[in-house]
View 1: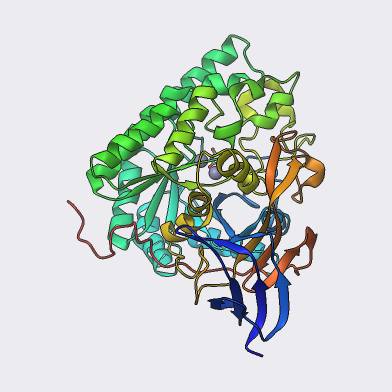
View 2: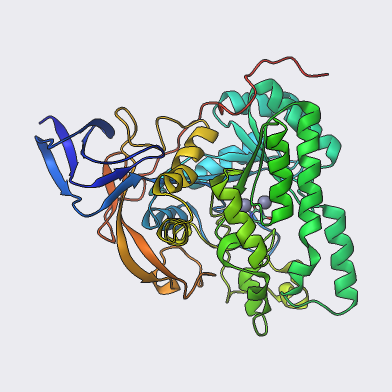
Length: 475
Ligand code: DUC
Ligand code: ZN
Ligand code: ZN
């Protein structure tokens, strides 16, 4: 047999082109693209279907330790299962360092959680919570060399926020090692100031979460993160951008020739602050940071995607159950929005939402959709061309779509371990029906057919967007 599998008769789209051809797969890789391929153990009929690179969701949180009493809903099994049903073949969650602990140990713990439990491929970003001399001088450079080539820093949150000095030091390590820095850009002190005042005024319901972190909180931190990166002369990825002002900070930096990149997420396209206003604690379902804004901000995020200010569209899947004392309805959360766990699920709905709202409504092309959801993630995080495209030699990571299927998003359709979706009731056209990871179906015609453990850990190259390693420090 020439091929293990042939996907026949579909319409293929990459970030560059759309064309009709067959895909021949051998040994988990794409071995041929051609007309009327034959000689395979199995032929998959994809007539009338779109055949796309599997989605890569480069911003998800799985099995991540949370504050005491709070438990993240998804582990690697349930999170990657949901990812597969959502048309994804790879996710990049975060290995979170606890302050005072070793970063290497955090990575080891995370591997233990993932090993044998994944349905799609995974690779890890690092979260630097403790920028000590030992971490920056020894652990981090060694980890970058071992294939952990991106890390996130936080400008807010107790126990996570780094000072400007610490961020500069982390960025300097990124410059010296050729890693890429991702930044959560919100002003910590401003949030603390506003939260204290809101609480003193008795404004403790979930809807005040948005008031505690208004747009200037994000705009200022975005500006500062860009300035810090400029000072060190290092590229930076601003994640989960929610509004025009922050988007314009990134656009201005890009126009000035700085290597500043941006990411936005579904919640900033289809949710608003009003969703936080649900009766009683219902608004807690939408508590995430930055918070969803308003219609004008949604429009700005679309503009950011269309003008390529944002190169990534990720879910920021950060799942907590709603009706659960270890989730959104934790006892402390009922006393103040301050204690409601931050984050919402979305790994399964990211692609259908962008396909329907973006491609079907004419806001972006199909090729831009592929770039924003797969190819750019692979390029940005050192996975291309092994991942993120349909080309001879690439891994056969493929999603087959029914572009006409109409679905009303509902929790009953989801495959993760939360008990709600913030996108309940949204009607979409277009749905991924089958997902193949390295040549084998994990989901086929809407049914789970892959085994747990099919997904593997993938070590990454350095990002081509980052500074080549070994550059002398700027100062
Ligand atoms: N930042 C994230 O990236 N995800 C969820 C919560 C947060 O603050
Ligand atoms: Zn964040
Ligand atoms: Zn996140």
